[in-house]
Amino acid sequence: MTSATHETPTPEQYGVGARFTLSVYDSDYVRIILQALGSADATGLTIETDDISTFVTGGEQRILEYLQSVIAAAARSGAHLSAAILLSRGCPGELQCALPPGMRALASAPIELADSGVRARAHWSLYPLLDAGSASSPPADAPAARPAPTDHMAPIYAAIDQSKAEGIYSGSDRYATRLDGDLSAVLQTAANAWIGVGAAVQHVVTHVTVSVNSPTNVDTAR
Image (cartoon, rainbow, N blue to C red; front, top):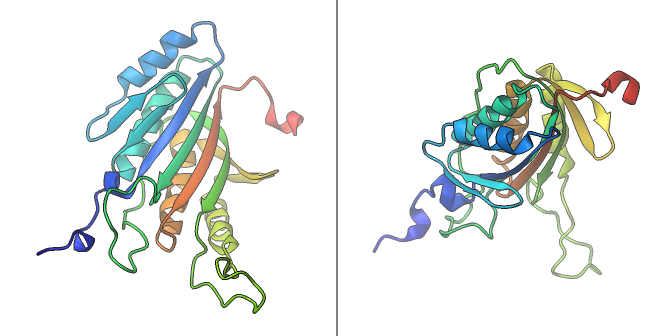
């Protein structure tokens, strides 16, 4: 009998997905949001929209293409908007299959997005939800259920350094890293850090809050 533990999980089984809320600060927001959602190519994706947010699951590349398309379409209305995005992969609560022993991540190619022509600023936070590497032995007086943590900040700092190398990094704000550039570059940088950390950590989440067409001058606001 072939065990399911030896099968490669699909992105959906592995819990690869996004949840996002698009907020448009314009009196015509309903039309702008619905047209943006309706214009994006949903091929290969499962999408569920409720009264709070939209859930998207499928392969990482297609998810990011969809997010880019929706946000760019809304941005072209000229209205000020923001998109609060959560990307998650490897969530134990979402898994529909048993992963093989030692399997820590679903291998994925880096995201590549064509330029959107939309200028975006974003706050970005990355959360490895398990320390990378082997946990060290806990102190003798530590509870058995609480092993001493390893350095979970290392992959976060590496991701920030990569954003600097890509020219997208524009500063560090409280609890978040600021990204600034073409919408596609901002989403691509955040997504590839998410995937990269996932090579060592099974469950990883990233939050990105994107702002487009803001009337606020960031240089005078900070």
